[in-house]
Length: 613
Ligand SMILES: [Zn+2]
Image (cartoon, rainbow, N blue to C red; front, side, top):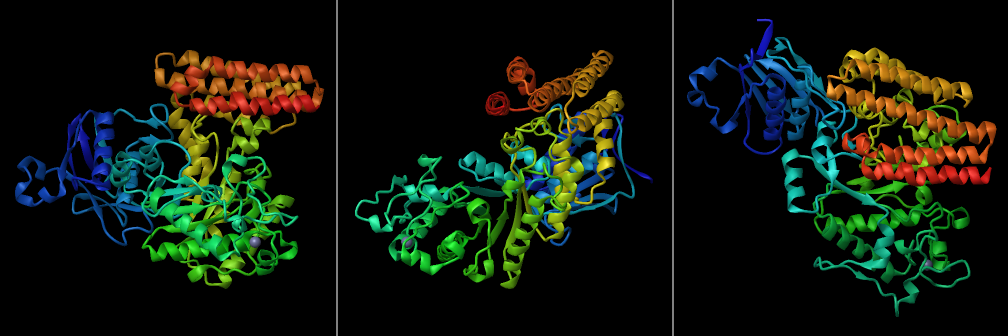
């Protein structure tokens, strides 16, 4: 026997064996669903408790059993192992959700692909007969134990290999988290809110904090005046700090944070509490606060931040909260602390590293000799020395900015979703993996964009599992499956755009970009009968057009320095996005919010650029 036949001429030849509920049941249902889509055959799912031999129907005894099971040690983290064992096809994992990843892997062996959101991003080949090689053996383990998503729905996030979802806020979301067996996270610049609002242990609605009669809790400014100190550009956000050397203020704030965790995200597996979003966190400047952590010029707030953080962790332990409690190295808390060590060696804590000023890879991989990369590598070395010196017991998570238009929208290559390049992304991810990071997150607002296709996103999700991925082979796989008969044309078009968007702007480059639209139109004419493929190619054609407009804008900004023509191009981009909104949003090339961001703030940023010329 050199093949395991699952479906023969539309007839099911296999049975799926899994428990009735939970992640393994979901894995079974996904396998059943896509096999039916592929072949028309709906395989029976046998609930595990019924799987003793005498209850199996006689005709089923001859069929291959596809068994989903959990076995501790089957694979590292939530990886999975697939193999043939006594005529059974076994999909096993140490964590239940690993079986879901295993189900998708099995479907990939059968020819399916899960590149991005369906229907365009999912490939389902049609075959009346489905078979697997008899010597099938797969062991796959993620490079990062914690893969935290930024876009998509919970089911999609799991389909793409992530293992966290945003913390559940309704019973339905809680049910979904259980069904998928995923972990839950909550994070953000929550600290200011903990200064402005009071949270209660009994979970009642939070109230505005009144500092009347407690003025000595407020931080002192450089003139010694005690006042509430919100971040200047986001005054509605709440304060940046209190006078934390004041025992009462310190106790109140840390209790408040504990109450917040226990009422707002009690079921989260991971919470990360960040200070205000500002480069210069304003600490209390009273003599007592300054004396406690007298860092050079009293410029680094990280000591105070982690001092407070430790106390919240200690109190959360006292309240029996078992999740991971993380801090962020970002803006004001970028530099490692000088005095403060982590409570219990950082046990059940997470170091979240967000090198924001790098602007998400526009300066090439983190490993190169660009001054910003050198500076942040030194900074990271400082943090790792700090952690290792105390035998750090917590985890480390990367917070990257790939395809983040908040940071990259001012660049023609950035606003067209080409930063970072795929090889840069791999170089970074490999580096972080080698530095011992346990988790990865990509902050990419607007974060539900798969334009012109899900290639970049899919490669990113693959790299989180396999930092050594063969990018060239993966790209080939993508073009072949996603663009089918037009793979070669689309590959050439995409590669030409990827190259030209990074070249110096010129009329010649703009003309060349425009001419690629004709190639897309010829492709479109050839595939009219295949609606799905036509939509994918139309996505590429639209992107080529968008890229040529963005390059034209860059041309006026840097070469002609013609304000009026530049602004006219920007208005054209805005109109063009609005004209194509229906197609782009309904086919999930981008969400409505993302499109509004491209047509709004990104265009406005460029209009301002031209005004300043
Ligand atoms: Zn103070």
